[in-house]
Structures are given as C-alpha cells and as structure tokens.
Image 1 (cartoon, rainbow, N blue to C red):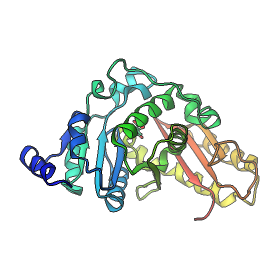
Image 2: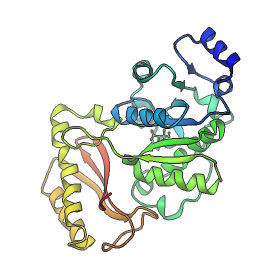
Image 3: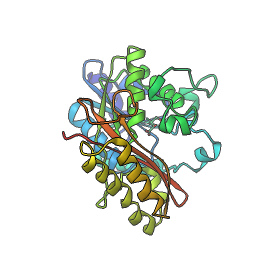
Length: 294
Ligand code: PAF
C-alpha cells in the first residue's frame, strides 16, 4: 500500500476502516495489490466469516460490504424485518482482522437517482425456484452486485453456495457485462445437525432449529439414491417424506444441472444438485447439496 495512504488511514481511522461512502473508501484501495470483496447484507454468522477468512487468505486487501439491498426484497415488510446488527457485525469483522475494510453505505450512496433494479436477462437460471417464487429478487441482487463489482473492481468476489441460484446469476452477470472479477463459490457452512447457516436461522425457536436437521437429512437421502434411482423417483420420495412431516411445508424439491438449472432426469457427466425450499413454522429456509462426489 502506498505510504501516504497508510499514514492517512492511521491518522483518520486508527482502528475502524468503516466507510459510508465508496468515494472515500476508494482512496484506500491499493491498485497494485489483489482485492477480495465479500458482499453481505449483515447479520453475519460463521458462514460469512468463512467467506471473509478465505478472502483474506487469497488477497492482499479485503473489503466486506454490509448493505441491506432494498431492490432484492419483494415485500417492504421483509425488508423491515431483516435483522439489522451493524455494530455486532463490525465487531465480528474486527475479531477476524483489523485490516479489513468495511463498506456500510446508505442507499443513496449506491442508488443515487432512484432505488430501482436494472434490467437483465438470465433465462433458465432466473425463471425457476427462488426466481419464480420471489419475482424480481435476482434482478435486485444483480443490480447491487454489478454496482459493487464496478465500483471496487475486486480481483475476487466471494459468495456462498447456500444461495446457489444467486451464485449462478452472479456468474452469468459477470459474463454478460464482461466484468473482470473472478467469482468464488464457497461451500455451505452447517451447524452440528446439518442445518445450513443463514441469517434467517435467528428467527427459529430452539425446537425448530433442532427439527430443521430434517432438511439436510432429506438432501443426503437424495444424494444416496442419485445414480441408483431416477430423479422422478427421488423427488417423489422426498416430497412424500415432507408430506408426512407436519412441521414442514415444502415449496419445492428439485434436481437440477448446476450450469443452467434445468431439470436433470438421470445421472450424467454433468454436475447436478438437489435444491430445496421449505417453510418451518413461519420461517422459509432454502438449501442445496451437490449429488456428485468432489
Ligand atoms: O447473499 C446476500 O447476502 C445478498 O443477496 C448479496 C449478494 C449481498 C446482495 O445483496
């Protein structure tokens, strides 16, 4: 990092490199070093910290963004209810490394004129599963991710595979817009019972958290049957298991190709995943599992 910038940083931000405006932050980016970006909406958990740690290991500088992006929420109620924990998020980041730069803007810094999504075509990867149920969601995700990738020009940007459809949307975005960043997908972090870590888990009761292990169990059953049974058979079996478990209401259970998210009928050379969205009490949870061995 250039010496003047280091001095400036020590002087103005002895401990906390937290920025509200990207125009101020940009002066702290060393153009000659590698930059890792970890976009988040806050409410950080171990899943996020594992992304941050990987970014730190693979880049000279790391920016974590904390921004609850309004355009990816279909209902203003969901946006209002989204957990807002900026202080504890910053503490958590500080505990990992004081070197990390945090960008936690107001909406006006990213959406100067109006808070609206741009328009993208993602074809088959958008029109199924989350994209079908949460209309406009991925347009909002792509809008904010394009802004972040364009502003900071990171070498690498890190996203969790728990939101695998989002990850494929972002890969498509980067291809379509010819953005220079490498998109790094990171495997899902789970609790001891297999529940995929998510900010929404904080809304589950203790009892629901225990019951939620059923989701990963079903994904593992699907994996054990893949290659032995057809996808039609497996889907029927898993749907039956959920109909017999009255704690859950299944939105979808699908077996799809990673690349284009089209339905996969039988085992082939191509990588396939099982995807699930389910309601447990009032909380909607999503998860997925690769059906191939690494
Ligand atoms: O996965 C998330 O937390 C968000 O969708 C993202 C990628 C930070 C965009 O707002």
